[in-house]
Image (tube, rainbow, N blue to C red):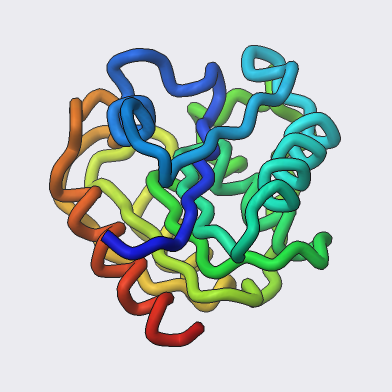
Length: 181
């Protein structure tokens, strides 16, 4: 795998032991993880600060590897920050207007930036994600200038174990990012 560092950006609750992000991070030096104080009651300012610190700690521009609410953080960060990011790899982008979005726990995340993202971006979606319909994912991908792939019915793409398919997609995305740098 290439030498581009990756920053894991979990969603609501922090991506526990069985989550693919945790599997990928375990035993690997190429991954770092943001650690905001507010995984259970997401505070946008706290999450942004945690991501800013993680990006600033890298010696070269990292790829942000986000899941769910973390994807909305990535979009917000990329629209606000001057931090150097090589790419954004986003899985299961939630729709803040959807019926299952945790608006009571994450109201700061409800206003999603619609600006084109300033780095290569890739979205992975599921055909039966309870937090986002395919039409929303297509719309947000177009607004952000992101490539999108639907991997079939994988629910919210969280309880998929090691998820080798996702890791292969990240490897391919990373190779494309590396060619651009």
